[in-house]
Length: 338
Image (cartoon, rainbow, N blue to C red; front, top):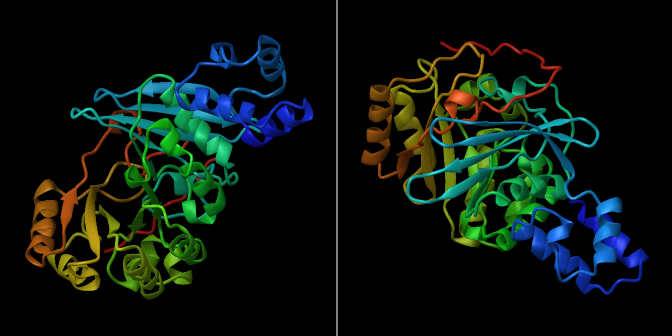
């Protein structure tokens, strides 16, 4: 729901300020529409139904994977595609993967979203409506901004949405915002965000030459500058940074590269998530389980905390790096790396 339009509509009618809060509380609890908001006068509900669409997004398709993961393709009112994912876990967790942009302009070579034509930044309401869509069917308790787009290129809208997620049942400590290292937005995050929202860095290589080949953003903001901001975050907020490292066979998965990553990060400030590569139409292949295990063992030996991410929703293209739905895809070919 367009919260700014809601507030303007209510103010123009001379409604008391608490009405907007009432509407939001109903929406955040999973109400299916204005009709459910029984503490609002019926006439007001009719006005809102006619003048403030209940969602800023239209559902185009929805698919469910064998493991219970759900992927929804939305369209914005001006036609841009947006995908978001609900991940269900056996321990009862219900985690959302939210998008901050339609497409992504940063073109990481292993990511399907980077092969799309970039649309635009999403508004805070469009980001929230992804979460509200799933909240209407199930309680939710975790969220990651790891869907389409680079959150730090849209930091105001991302933070505006993240700060409302506790009303849906997702605390700040269970919210993670990821970045490939867009330093201006990252710097603002470090300086301004006092809430215990988690920070994640997509790194994928421990040296600038390789990282620039697979992630062009590194030419603009090299590892030195990005890690300096991450370490400032650790010092200011006393919270580790989560490092995402997608495992690409023959590219970044050698024992020497594991040792380089351990040396680069050190044991105290970062926690590494090793991500099995999910097919995205690029030239890459995923590392074997054995190769990933060796890589993790080297990090463990160096006392760098490391886990291997559980893949969810691969059979419906809902796993990490696979979100990409647009009629005007660039079909960009990844740069091979020996």
